[in-house]
Image (cartoon, rainbow, N blue to C red; front, side):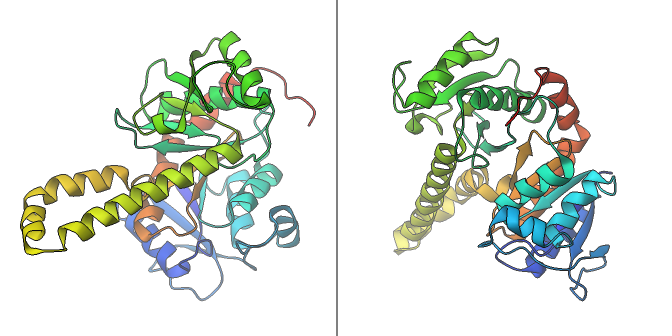
Length: 323
């Protein structure tokens, strides 16, 4: 079974919640290896003791250089050194990226790694890329993000010839800022199954199998979607409990409501792939519950089993440019 290095100190809820998620994943037969401070209760899982914790408010590059033996950096290094097959962290996302670039390095031909997030669209899961790794981007980056997103959709979502669309403020090719206009031209000239622009309102309806954006726009869209979904689900639950009639009706629709919540809840996927590195890294939400951590570990294991890194490397044939 894949060995998954888990940053036990990452996340807002503390090591206990991360360990609980790792134990849940271990019950499925997976092999989580915890990286964290001495003395934490691992519930019997293997612990590799580390020195230091990278906090959420630290500057990523400085923190990675200044804390090379921290739990986050040590877990990423384990993949680089072959002690683990993938890494999962709910810690500082920028630090995971910085550690990945330092320890794992980019796949030849990749200009920038990108975060690929599964989106629970109405027509079935799709992928949003980049969801936050690159706040600033160039048109050629977005073309590569699309290629990486296609590999994700094919290998992880089982989609044949994925449809790609570019997130913008209108469907017309001339709509958007200079970045999206130039990226549209590159995507249209590529051999990808590009169907033009899409708007944010179309993401959940299933506008495309792969929705491409720069990291700033993609992260804003992702956080808005997640917040809206959770607010609506919570409001729905409160309305059901508001009076006797609602409670009775709620009992009748409970199975459907549970299925809907499971499909839309971000915890269902647990995390997102940081694609473009020579090793597999999964970034989980900082506020991840034990369920989300367990699902992030499962996501990492599936990526290992399906050789996402190897398949992605085979697709990236253009030489890397100096950056």
